[in-house]
Amino acid sequence: MAQVNSTLKNVVIIALLIAGMLCLMWAKVSFQRRQQTEPDNVWSKTENLVRKVGYGILIADVIIAGFINF
Image (cartoon, rainbow, N blue to C red; front, side, top):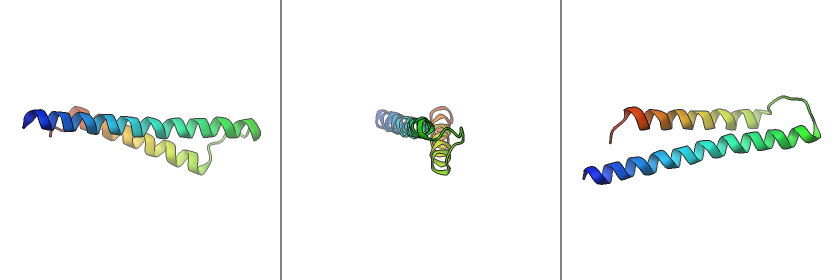
């Protein structure tokens, strides 16, 4: 049973890591593309929200990886 829980935890950690990094990458790429056409150097509301969600997911990932055993 311990092996199944360890595998489940690893899958959850990897899934959260991928989701968080995808959010951050999408926000950065969207920001860079938009800056080529309108260089205002300000994050849009959508980009900022996605970036904050990405950071939140990564923080949750670190907490699960370091402090939660299941």
